Image (tube, rainbow, N blue to C red; front, side, top):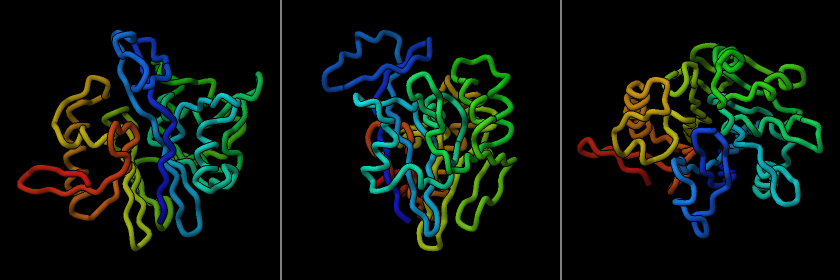
Length: 254
């Protein structure tokens, strides 16, 4: 199993939920008052017979008008059209924007040959939720044009891919575990978005159920340590992937 980090960039986001590129080396955070600063990195994983993508980022383009996500997939040595499955943790814009991209005034599927795997409750909630974190025009387009697979609860998608309904960040958020018999890779979406959230206990205001999210991080951390998972951190500020160890009740990530 091969894992590739597809770093889309660093951004500031304020109450308007607008994501503005932020370069820590040149930009002053004081110029972005009341903003949250985040990094965004989907992950590409090569399994024996399939190529899967975990979440799709914002869907922003580079200076040449090319989708940053496509550019990074090519840098990893793959063709975006060869992606078989898009495994979505949830549908907030910073995770789902890259499911589509704009060519002129037209919207197109970013991965026309892929199967988009989405928790059914998350899909239905996205159309009824009033939050600007959901962009229903994207989902309308997917509904008409994409290959969609809706899953419910927790279960096994393929021999190598299992999924678990967690809720917590959104009511129907889900996580994934890949197991090819030799390696195990865990994608925790926004329940385990960065190593620092595992290393210190806290309740985040941006979670639907902050206490449950905190408890799940602890649970997944213990499982990761016991089963030697390679954890993928979508919003990591420091380490994008890592293995968890637990000593005297303290987590460490290497």
